[in-house]
Amino acid sequence: MKEIAIITGANSGLGFETALEFAKKGITIIMACRNIQKATDAKNSILLQVKDAQLDIIKIDLSSLSSVREFVKTFREKYQKLNYLINNAGVMWPEYSKTVDGFENQMGSNYLGHFLLTSLLLDLMPDSSDSRVVTLSSLAHKWGKGVINFDDIHWEKKYSKTDAYAQSKLACLMFANELNNRLQEVGKKILSVSAHPGISSTELTRHLKPFQIKLMKYTGIEALVFQSAKRGALPTLMASFDETAKGGEYFGPQGCCEFKGKAGRAKKSKYSQNRENLKKLWTLSESLTKAEYIF
Ligand SMILES: NC(=O)c1ccc[n+]([C@@H]2O[C@H](COP(=O)([O-])OP(=O)(O)OC[C@H]3O[C@@H](n4cnc5c(N)ncnc54)[C@H](OP(=O)(O)O)[C@@H]3O)[C@@H](O)[C@H]2O)c1
Image (tube, rainbow, N blue to C red; front, top):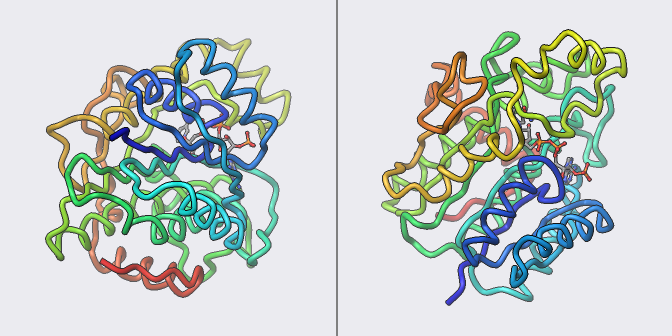
């Protein structure tokens, strides 16, 4: 029977490159995207390269808990199992705004939406180490203070777009770690793993000011530091398919400072592995999203 993958944000950047490689393996892909036109363009682009690719678009807006629930309802009506869940979609450094559920946008879209999504799909995953929940984090999980701002989780007192992004990606990594802990505690074989792409050329920089983008281009920073989205997707692919992968592992580029290079095991901050921190974030996330994890 064909394997099935959900890839959030499959229309652009790393998500697109990941979907392309999954398609080459003959895996049925559900492109979980918020913009149907962009998703359709991406689907057509994959079909040009992989003629028999099985690609299904289902709309999701991760900044809305009701949209996440609607996505899962549609998915479950069409499919009976799930082999890979790639929690990839993300937004970086937007001006301050809140989601419809009252969450700071980056925390809501990058993390809390995926926290709920995973809870609603886990029971469809076969109990095997080939079943993978892969969550995208970032080098940024160590940047800023490198901690969860538990006292002001939605940055209502003072917003820093860079710190809020860093927090959201730290939360993603902590989620992957704690999900792995909880799966292992009940003896489940499904792997929860995480990945980061170093610094990759994608549309993630869309909220930068035009002069910042020009600066990166003309000073040569972009050429020096960035790698292609195709290479940036390699850690996600390793997390998804490496047969030696263990639950809780984190994959990223192996070059200088983990900016670029071939994929391998990456370094996590100590904070992201501390069980007390993990449990505290998990409990808060359950209460914010009303997610019910049943293991
Ligand atoms: N590029 C890097 O250097 C880098 C570094 C570290 C981590 N990452 C992580 O890698 C992941 C992929 O980013 P990327 O670099 O490929 O950026 P990208 O090209 O901007 O792609 C982001 C994707 O996420 C989607 N998305 C954003 N908000 C969404 C929402 N509320 N609901 C549904 N989809 C949403 C976007 O949809 P639209 O096209 O409709 O906006 C797009 O498909 C992110 O989690 C990012 O944090 C990237």
